[in-house]
Picture 1 (cartoon, rainbow, N blue to C red):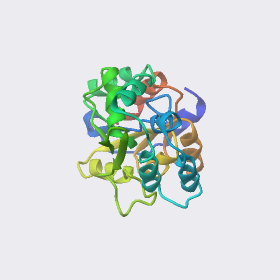
Picture 2: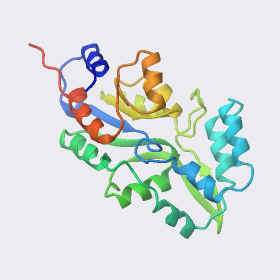
Picture 3: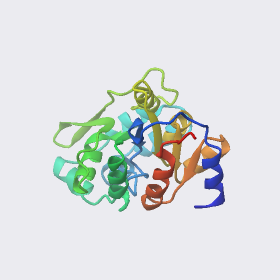
Length: 240
């Protein structure tokens, strides 16, 4: 553990003593659990012309992520067998199952909260023995032999990112149950919610965002490291 991480643990705001089960872990999928962005990989392989222009509009802030993804999914040209065969090639962090097991031994729920595709996420998780995990994400719906559409039941008109799945609302749902939230993520879709979590495990671009905004966090590179950090972060605070 590096000095920066230790300092952040020491500076963590004091909280009342709570059992480990009072924590819930909310974890991003694409680039955090999976080693690639699954939606991007599908578009690279099966996307018709026009999806890159939608991506550029989103990156420039001209459209929200939900509008971008809805348009991109409509450009996918693949059948169900091709989808499943492609998903069978998607790798995850090999240490993620052990991270889940450690959290569950501590009585904690691990939720996968993603602005990606539920069908894809569930397929990949099931291949790695993690099909029991709750997944909250956009719905990938087949509406023709080779055509697909995006349905976003977890969108919110109040979402500042105009996402298909408002991760901040998913966090507030857990707060309403008197739970503390350990959020785990890697990129731009995790920026907003990280400012509301009790603690963040951050990798890639999310590390700089948490550092710049002075959010309580610890950087990690893989889930082997995250598993070690998790125990320290969610351990009950003992008041003497």
